[in-house]
Image (cartoon, rainbow, N blue to C red):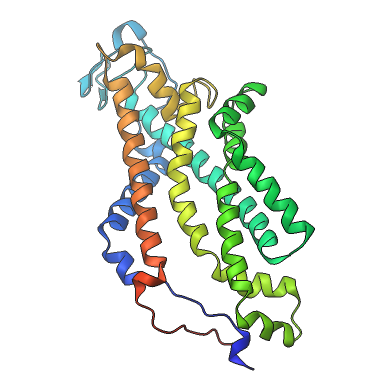
Length: 302
């Protein structure tokens, strides 16, 4: 079979990625935080919402021991709940909400961008007009509006973040698909009798995933920050279910006498978001063919 019927596939420089300190730091932080969150029942001190003797255990400083001999590594909050335990279970919520919201937005953006980039005529015009209209809406205002129309919950936050974050992905995918659709391998595949849907699914989309991967890596940190912002405003995950956002909100009134209540989730949020950003930058550089020194494309065998 003629090799010109198949697109060039640019392979990421895995060795460059593994040597990149940004990738090592970002992936290491995410792996550690994810592992601790998954093992929450094993590394925590009980229930995240358990309250005992509030008067005797409230606002204990980090590494303090309560009357029952239990050590609290990060202290306790106003209700005597262990901050370390709530931080771990809050990581489950924050990471899950961020990851699922990004997956939803990536799926929507991938479909819209692929269709708009490959099919011409009214379909492309309508989809691009819809994307431009959604991009013109202030995302923060829209998030606040949607969050106030329905009862706040983790599921609502995922849907809101997913349905308001697909536009940039769609634009990136649309540009990549249009560029690839003009390559000679598309004409060769058509000449071999392949349908347009087959060409799009088997050849064009796999080669257009570079911006999608980068957007996913960078988008997780952004989604976690937005979830924390909504929870901080009382429009996200509701207490007593812990999330980093509502933990920061619960400790904002005690920054003077008990700063650890808000500082622990705040530091965790900053570290995870920075890790996602650094990992996304490293992946983008590894997937950038101009940085990989590719002099000639490699071809996929039929």
